[in-house]
Image 1 (tube, rainbow, N blue to C red):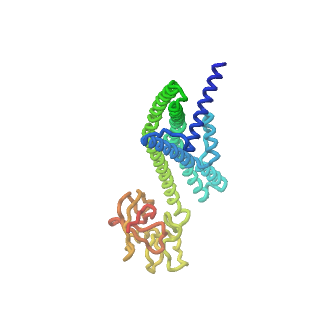
Image 2 (cartoon, rainbow, N blue to C red; image 1 turned 60 degrees about the vertical axis):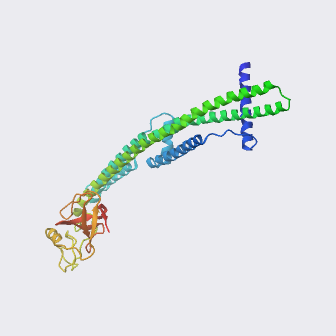
Image 3 (tube, one colour; image 1 turned 90 degrees about the vertical axis):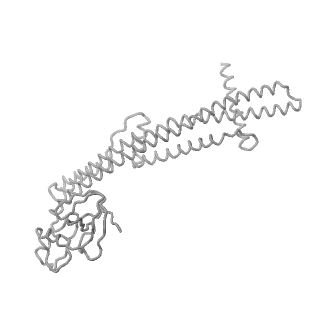
Length: 379
């Protein structure tokens, strides 16, 4: 009991001494041991790493889970060391609604059939999103959290110990200075000065030891950067895979919808929303026939069999042709379109009445409609 009381009294005395030293330093009434420039740079680098890691972590969490309530729920499950329950993604929920709508409105109708196709695509998008979230959480978020909750806490603890050792050291320096001043006035015995010098030596040794421990931990931040760099590459890889999957799913859906559009809306091409050319007579019985976009010639609209022939006969305008670089591979849906290969150069131009989302493309002696979104128009 007496030992515990003495220890508590000693700890209280040390705390009081440190508080006095800290306060006097703030008011400029006491000297402070300064760390070397390299050490200060290490401290600043560590603080910057911690601050930016926290920001990147929080914003990545927002990216993967925009719902703040869901993020709080996941945080609580992690703190309780329990498995986070599986949650339906927004894409999967939209797919469910579309499928139910198609079932109720008529799965055999054009609208119902399209709802079903889009529903299946949204379901695949939702599954891809789920995989991306899981992969990104394991390969990117978890290492960042481990740094903040593990390595950084250790660094912070050792920095606090170093601060205490530094306060003890400066307090010993102040006591020795006072002892020597009193000795000069012959009001203090030499043994008091010897005692103060001994305490200073002990405090200096403890400070140097703690400074070395803290320095080694701070220099380990470089290894942290290397680890985070590797995790960042994994995050980019998972994100690239996710968006590539989304692109493939949507491209497949676009082709499915495009191949059925001519059946649902006779008189339009794949990807078009209005007739490509205007007939001379609004009463012509062929105004709804599928034709290629051709310049007005004064003749009536061509039949589907004549459309391909008309395409070959189309001449590029005297002005207005441009070169374009193909961004992605494109598989022609029918004979009216031109298949594309990524990075190839083709000549493109528009014709009166064409849908703005399409152009006529030429490559050698081949020509056909090409989607604008697959091209980079060159000046």
